[in-house]
Image (cartoon, rainbow, N blue to C red; front, side):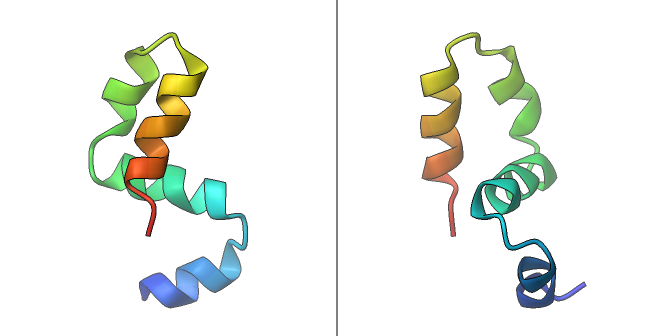
Length: 48
């Protein structure tokens, strides 16, 4: 699916960032971190 089309269907920017992180294989390493702020910072670093 086209990324822009997917983004329109899922208007939540945070959800979109999480999905991108998952598809790039980062979710597993992020999930291992216990510090929620650290998780958010990692997700933010992969925002589009």
